[in-house]
Image 1 (cartoon, rainbow over the protein chains, first blue to last red):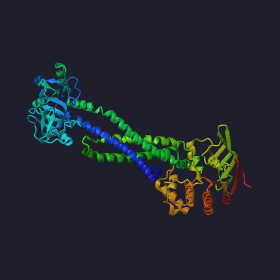
Image 2 (spheres, helix red, strand yellow):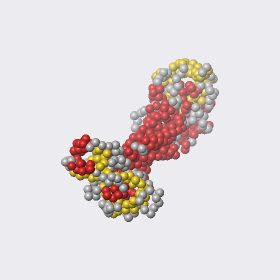
Image 3 (cartoon, chains in turn cyan, yellow):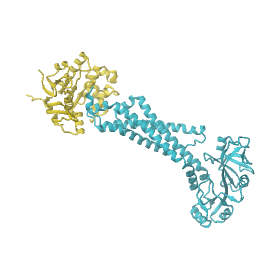
Image 4 (tube, each protein chain N blue to C red):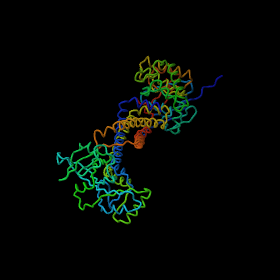
Length: 375
Length: 231
């Protein structure tokens, strides 16, 4: 590292602090937003991905698990079970809805993704029960533990919709979609609660196969034999669910990421530029002493790189430090910090530092060393 | 018998005309000047007479409008900027009126950075040489001081050390006593003259300070861009 670069940079500690702070703020914003995006991605697709099914049967045109716009006849389950490759078929009734706690305000509702499943089969039911009784009995529901955390729903509480209610019998984990959580009831309870007509209506069928490698063949055969039915793997269905929810957020997120990058770039660029302008005479002295333009460019680039590196370390450090506590304060603030994202932010900071040095470097080339003989 | 010392600086019919729109100002008019190693030349003249222009042309910082400039036998008149920088780095040392030390660097670092520039000297060699030179100039107790902690006389001595540090053949001093009181000015000029003679450097001092005359072997007068021997 060049002596002049290091000494000039650290001689102006306030300016360095502002510059590093600007980059760190930018890195922190980018880091926390990316982590939030990753966290939400994992969360909203998590339940669908973790249901141990080889295939999901949906009606054609179904976009995702949360909208649950699929309508299938119960008889389809019987037909699917007749296929020799199929091991288990589990019917699900899924409906998004808003409920409130009995005894609470009717206006104090929250979203629930009610999932009716067959407890004898289990597939598509709670992934992991953490407290209380499961499977739920008639008129009972097992809710996701995040619903308990965010809305204070306790075991024994009743969730009300219209004239119907369900009693909470337990808590499960793994069914959080950020803005809504799953609640599991038996098929009969769900049909009664929703007053489903006809009672044979189903939303999805989840299937396991004897040989998961035959997934594509089975999917093609079913789609050919039953027009209007769409077969999809759990992974793809999870991805579609993620896309459906996060695609609305993504453009906003990209804009905020760009703004954060520009803020860091502007702060670093302006402080390095003003430092270069202030030191114009000294750069003139160096030129007069026979230092070449590339040497002076290196001075500015090194200063920019040091600023970027310090800003990155500070910003990434704060991100790693605060991320685990963020969810405790705001439950919806689900973050997942990945090293790949940290590496990407490091690359973005490098780009930021290079761009921040560009204009000051151009100014250096115009410094006339004759100026050092004036005054 | 020894021959004459080599010619270090040659200006042949050098003119410098500054143009701005329809106006033009002749800063130097047909100046011819030869200076040999070990010679100290004072160029006197009033403000605006073209002294600084002459110095910057001699120091390969500015190109003349007409005429030719040779430094240590090399014609630098039409050299490109990178070659001019190389000439300045190897052949020319500057001493400025306002010292022009780098404020964030200590006295030692101000000298060391010039020694290291473009040389194969390692950091420790450069440090050692810088330290030795500063000691020679009575600055051993100030080597780690920043310029803002140095007196003006000390700053000018550091500047002279910096000019000598890269072992140039030509030293160009622009009003080196202007910002110093009489005693410090005398000391600085005495030191510069003594070292230049010891090391066989060619020295050009431009000044309008009459005290400079006593240290020079030749005194020239510059007025309205024209150079002549001083009466």
